[in-house]
Amino acid sequence: MPTDPTSHPSLAHLRFPGQPPPAQPGPLETRAPSALRKVGVMLLPVVDDPAPRIYNIFPTLAGPLTQWGEHLARAKAMRFDWIYVNPIHYPGFSGSLYAVKDFYALHPVLDDGSGRSADDQIRAMLAAAHEQGLKVMLDLVVNHTAKDSPWVEAHPEWYVRDEDGGVQSPFAIDPANADNKTVWGDLAELDYSPRPARESLVAQFAAIVRHYTTLGFDGFRCDAAYKVPAEVWAEMIGAARSIRSGIVFAAETLGCRLPEIEGLRPAGFDYLFNSSKWWDFREDWLLKQYNAFRSLAPSIAFPESHDTPRLRAELPDEWPLERVRAAYHRAWLFASVFSSGAMMPMGFEYGFADKPDVVTTRPEHWETPAFDLTAGISAINDMKRRVRVLNWEGPQRMIDLDAHVCVLVRAAEHDPDLSVVLVNRDLDNPRPVGVDVLRQPGLGIGQTPLAEMTPGRAKGRLDPGATVRLDPGDLRVFVHDPREQA
Image (cartoon, rainbow, N blue to C red; front, side, top):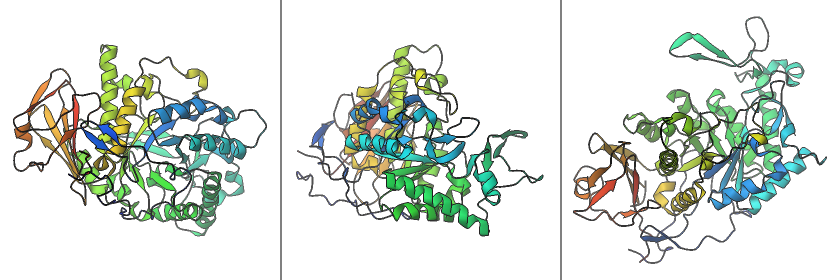
């Protein structure tokens, strides 16, 4: 094995189809890289051009923008490198973060009352984040506005109309029951169908994107991206990159059909959000989705989000707190090793029980922590930022070893790096796995040297004749990385 961490060629120059050239170094990129650190039994440097490890600050839970210092410091201590912020704009009559009335004014809960302009307060927050070495991604909502937006009267031609000629609200129909229709009455749906009026609508959002890029945001999370045509996204992405070439765009595509995701291919997104949260470690749909779209863009996994219930709400009520804590640790570990990027919402590290509400959540709803996972999350994030294959969206498959244990094998596309994740699907009983079974022909592992990376576990290698003991619900992570230091 090479002993010089720089002797193996970097793959930072390789891009996925549709991705822009690598960003030019800025203040964050020119920070000195971390020193070599022991990960398991391997001594590894930080990966070149790592995938994002994102901490989601829910803005109205955090309070005024200029008072986020504690949250930013905690994110840095947990070794996140990105902050994702839900919409921060002035809302319409419903008060929902996602019903934007004025894209250039702050939500009242986020204003610090100093009298400074919204832009100045935003710049101060961004400066504080950048000082911590954190990039910031803003939620971008372009498929609708608040129904009381001034645009409704000033630009009626921008909106979808119902059969009576009124502004149409977005809706969803339950695929299992067509009579079950959900209508978001506080929203007005924008019309991106090809027609002359679309040009001025897209120009308006391109100006908004340029504005927030100029203020210093490093990326955008694009809400319900599949509801907007790819050519429209391409124009908005181009507008941002006319200001900063390396700005990141991540597409939120949850709940859409696979052809709708495929339709975004020409847009030029850097990342997609995947559906790994809902996987049962048995069905093959997730791996099909992963392998189908990794050529479109690498993906981001998450254990919960502002759109889902908190993980605690999905666990059995009778579970003791230590078992709940273990489930949280396992969920973040899986999100971190399944795909390139990973995102964690504020409060996950403390086992918060209440789902944040886009209308009513306020700083006083901060909960007393049920436990503190910050140290464990920091260890997982440090592992991820140092293991190359965990930052690359290479081919991946699931292999059933028996009714209770499966293995995820993920290879690098152009290098010999490999990750092998053992999963005990049995939440009640430990399960042994023989190393010789893993190395049998046909599994794609062979005799490749593999060292354990799992934070907090006994460190070793998958040696012939050995047995790995998986605790109930356990995940164990083993990696081959040719940069390993002697």
